[in-house]
Image (cartoon, rainbow, N blue to C red; front, side, top):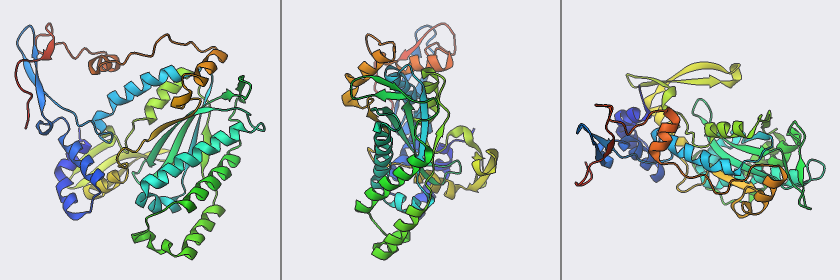
Length: 378
């Protein structure tokens, strides 16, 4: 099986020599290439019955590494189970127009923060309006920056409970279908985003250098105001359990997973993708390894940038007060204590049904870290 690690290992050095990389992009390449190899060190696991031993190398733990996301995702999902209400949930997506892609890439932190802020205020303000719901809602936002072809496509996924808390402390149920017309969402989101963008201190160079001219910038703003921005709402989930399963597909996903990579041959990478413009057909794309790495690195987020955020009754400051009240009002079971965090081995057993502490040699003994002795280093 071909992995992103294989592509970077073979073609990463040449890419670094021929391209200018940001520090965070360079680190991602280094971490993925070193993940679970002797470069990061490791330890020896030994069987307590037959004496079998093996080396376990350390993971890089980089959030852009496909190998390191499974356990993080499962832990995050377990934590979110304590936040779910026994109501329906909606999935709303806010997307930036293609016209903003280059500007967004050159000003990632600024533009992505504005995307979060504009989408959050759009949902919060419209839901507070008695015309639509008249209540404070809570929702989770997840940033994705890619399309299926790995090109730049910034958008926000929002998971929204079907109701909220009104000013007198009552739970207000929303309509079965999403309670805010998509066109209303789109226009308010567009206005919010462009208002914040005009106030931002943007870096303009290269492809966006002409926007330093006020007239050119104003023309872009005018064109964006005239364009219909894409906001859509998917059908509601059947239950809170479906929400958890669905969140797992979006939270810790990276631009492309290893299982979509089909082949690496003579400097060409083949990977599967869905063409949404052609009836959601599954297709195969073949591009040069150099271009594959370029597209992958587009989606490396700024250092310490938070790509999953919670708002309203789900915000950290409201969890112990408003969220607790909402659970009572919606007859949601309240746990006496938060879900205990599972160990890595317990999570693997839960996911695969396999006990990885059992010795693969004798099938009787258990593996544990050998001691005494120093950790293995390169």
